Picture 1 (cartoon, helix red, strand yellow):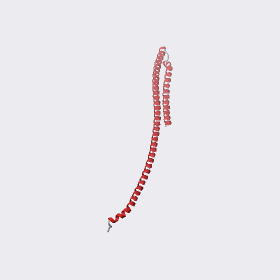
Picture 2 (cartoon, one colour):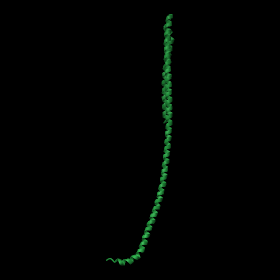
Picture 3 (cartoon, helix red, strand yellow):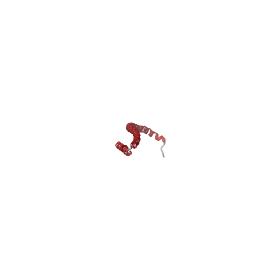
Length: 178
């Protein structure tokens, strides 16, 4: 059977101070371990914050570099677009001037054609009235009309060659730009 509690009390009096010291020592050891854990945790937290701050700074720097590169690309593209627009405007202006010159040239050609026809008729009428050969009187005007036609054909050929050269130059610029 179990001994009576009264007989255990003297033994507990002797054991109690040792148990208390052991409990205090255990809690102190646990407290020291807790303090060491807390200190290590604080060190790791500080290191994590430094690494995070450095990573964030690196990301900001990278983002800034990307923004600057993107801005440079936008500026380059804007300059290219502006240059192309200026070239296009110059081309349209040149085309308008060429069309105006062509219309003026056609007007002069029509006037020359009418003048040649009128002078040819007048020469034939004068030769007929004088009793001469109307064909002989018209001959210089026929030659002049042939010269006018040949000149107009040469102008069309020159315009066609000019257009081909312009297209080839535009193609060369486009290939070299890439």
